[in-house]
Image 1: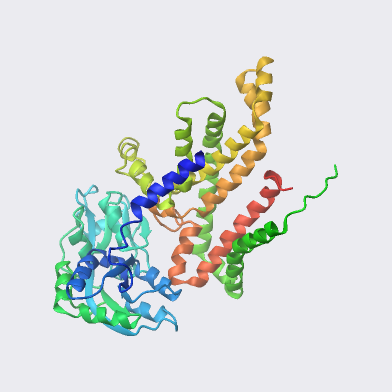
Image 2: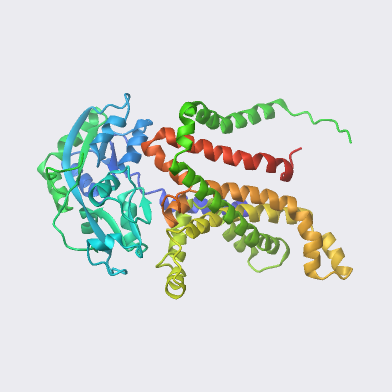
Length: 247
Length: 263
């Protein structure tokens, strides 16, 4: 009896969570796109624009750039890899050499952000050094974490999150007082806001795309179209990085 | 006492060996890829030692809390006629079937700074659980407790309560019965449950990173360090996995002989 209850519960969970990803169109022609987590909000609109331009459906796999690169290295199937760090193309291994690469299709910069009600009363950059606040940032090794370290140096960080989306969630839920995220995250998430006003400052993160299969090259071409650029601009991505951009 | 050994049906043996191979193969894979030559260097790193210390501290404290909370709970489930017992038991087992990340999120909504109870902890007592080692202990306890309760409750049921009844009719007060009869007989099962719960706490990942975050020396446990190293430094990840494997075996091998029926 206990088993039955547990089994029913699991079936229930599966039923509520498992239906969404498979669209009505079936899987045959869909492109599998590995997407850096900081592109989470824009990829849906990019997919819509791509389909409007006659492309097949997209199957998006969102995750930290490094995590996705590790999956690719270990043989995960993908047609396209959109990353916040072009250097990751070099660690995919001899079996996974991209068919084509688009060096840079957008860029982004870091901002300090707070929950919308600013529980700790953050005023300016000096507050980054305060130890009585909860400060979260990306872990070093992932693009946003490396950029954070480059720009701010050692900070009294309370939690190194695996991806920038995790930092955004900490702030949006009010569990952290201050976090380092991308400008696009502040634009997209209504529950967080920039901690103070400042002009866009690099180091910037530049997004690169790799086609892992011949099919994927079409999506790279699409990223250079005006439609794709418009979508990216709408979400607050810059077109070009400043000269001092990240490696 | 000599017994005629049971003759196992051959097909059963074949399947059983397949089962062993399935479980052992990943371990063999880990061992053959392990960077034995640079192991010294990898394991001596500050980051590894920090993670080991956090892991041991968190899992041992969690195991202690599990025994204190879990023993009365298992006893109640087995012996007391409580209403909605089936529902209560399902609730107790829930963390076992729940994906740990979901468990961590649930903990955040309950005990986080803006959580149901957490906001009062924060406001009245200035206690914030997320991003602290205490938070990591809470996460580990949450996922490990059911393993202990299930084991001990099962043992209590198998044991029956004849002896306790008897002691009661002879005039022993309930606490004496518990201390002199129930607990001594329960000790092996408690040990087994403790070993399982501790192992689960040691391996805990999802609830920890979701609820307690990831800070070296405070909340970054071995599994978190392994996950992170996997992305940037696979060699270090392998070394960390070996540490986890070794620590688990060191505890499980002897306890298994002593506490779980092994014949």
